[in-house]
View 1: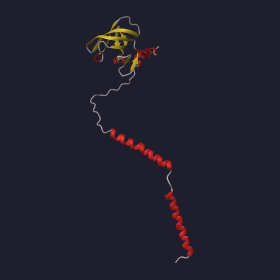
View 2: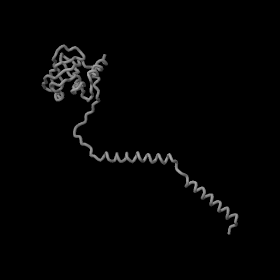
View 3: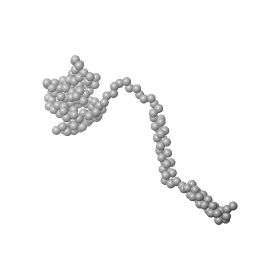
View 4: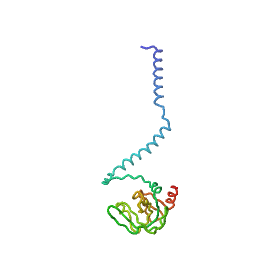
Length: 185
């Protein structure tokens, strides 16, 4: 049997151990940590649900080659010999060439003194050109013939408003075109 002193020492030691364990278990987490974790759950769970629902549709199968375009015709404005507004009056296809008669309504750059000129280009342009449609033409002159600069890059189509659209889908107003022309000087 233990003496009273040993018994009391054992009781005090055990009480100290229990007291230390109680402090560890009673330690409360930081209230900011608790609230921030709850807020994170409110943000993360809806994002996970939305991402899971968006990918359920089957991808579209594309059987055509993809074409990469850079979307900038600034070089056309800088290097074209003539920039003018006109309407296609007539078009003809000959041996992989396209010829069109253009009635000029305004000359924006260069010296063209005729009211109607003939322009040429490759035959794949023929599907893009519509008779009686107004265009802005960027032309190069070679051997007294006018050619579209860089094929379709030399053509801006009127979209039935005060703006013109290039082959890349960019819109230009007459002011934009004039500013691009002024930038070459």
